[in-house]
Image 1 (tube, one colour):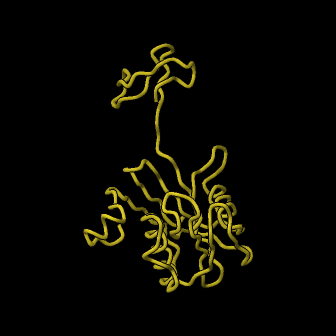
Image 2 (tube, one colour; image 1 turned 90 degrees about the vertical axis):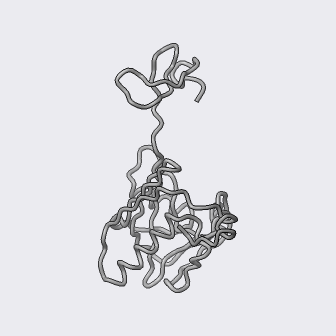
Image 3 (cartoon, one colour; image 1 turned 120 degrees about the horizontal axis):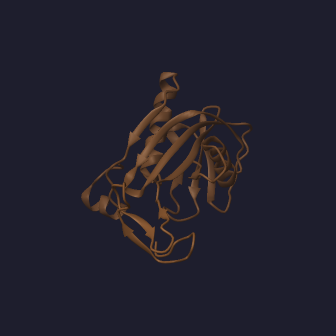
Length: 192
């Protein structure tokens, strides 16, 4: 950040009085600008014994698989955001259920809130964000082609709960950045 969004003057990175972290502070009007984590919301849409998966048509991780998720918008609840993202990315309409998992990803300053979702009908389809959509059983999930560790872990929690006949709420801290795919191949690492 170089300029104050309130008055347009230059900002300085400094620790304001009474604070403990460096903040961007306006040299002219004194406004302190806080940068906070982004909230990502999504759901695992379920239709009978299958879940809806989307092949990403956008970067990052173009061509890999995910379930619908994206940034929470101002003025909406996390559940509303998860339902909106599902419609935007897959054309599917869902009823949002309970929170499945909250995942902290501090290395990218993100917090994920992933819900269970029940599709109101089996309709789904491609969108500008998804080049392909498919209803998949657990054994059909392309585990080696999952776009992000948060998606992989959420799916694992979902299927483990379903196998046990429970709907637990999980938390997970992903504190270590996984290697880039080309690094993982060289090092022989598995998915984080």
